[in-house]
Length: 424
Image (cartoon, rainbow, N blue to C red; front, side, top):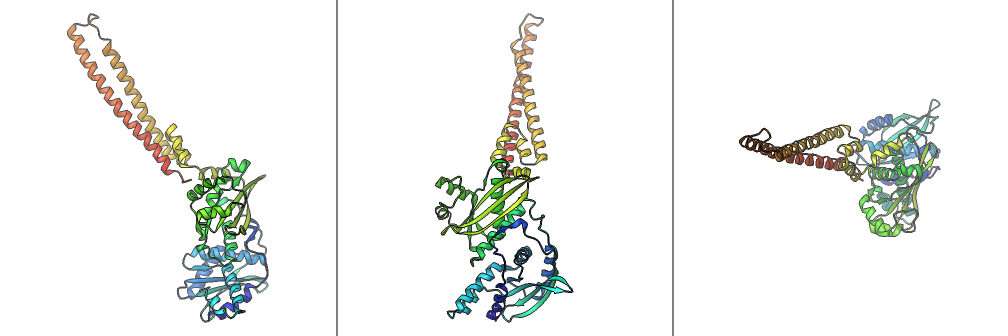
């Protein structure tokens, strides 16, 4: 029965450890190879009859290791994109509610809210003096163990540098921490509407556009994590309405949230620290101004500046550049091939137009300079005038056509720069 399985999990969930809602995500060690973990989970879940909702619980007295393993399991299960994952934070919140309800005779009703058809339990066991992560798949209705798999654990587990080298990875980790903070309160992130305010940045971080880059990456990471994320355009309009372009505190969070229909808002800051940048983010509840989750991440400075400059380039900036110099907008967008093509075609058309225009001008000057008596008879002068007039008209027509082609190619170059630029 479901209640029996939940009772088993409740004991595991009560193991002591660090809270999951805060921390420096870049210093968290990684204890298992997530590629190997995915293979093991694929094998383990073959034992299930098309699981729909799978709950995850990790039993480990080492708080740091437990938190790392929880995140690895959640990330890997989400990578499968087959089952609906109930995270350890949601499991613990649901079990706490069930335990509280049991005191007043409502245990079964509270437990049913979990609605998981299968459960994966993970625990550290000793095999020949070596730490191993043991995974079990339980069928929730009966509590039967459907399968067991093991994954080697790196006992040394140095702090992962691979997860702190770029903004995208840091944003993903920050989104995980924020999700844990929300789910620790028993709220499924898929029903939670969240807004991401423009990050605050100063000095080199501001010059490198990391404020806009971090906002964009956090928005993407939270959406991938399952949150209902408020569109940036709607957020910008609401902030302009409240005249709080520089949102640094929580004094107007409730007012902003009411305009957006959001339950929480993410406030982030980017600061310079020598050869690194530090990203700090916290999710603040709209109704209570309570911090739901907070974390910081350290990213190395190399390559971040150039990446941020590329990722935050706006369509307007690209269009203006292409209007000034054809191909410049495409180069600004990082598309060198288009930059060359538009540069050659537009300047080629422009050069042709100018050349034809100069020829038409010279022909017209010759027509106007025809006089009788300078080696020309009246008949010869008349014929020459007719020839030059026809030539001038033909050149003027060709100049107009070339000018129209030039204008069309130039306009197309501007439109392409506008459309091919990443949205702001």
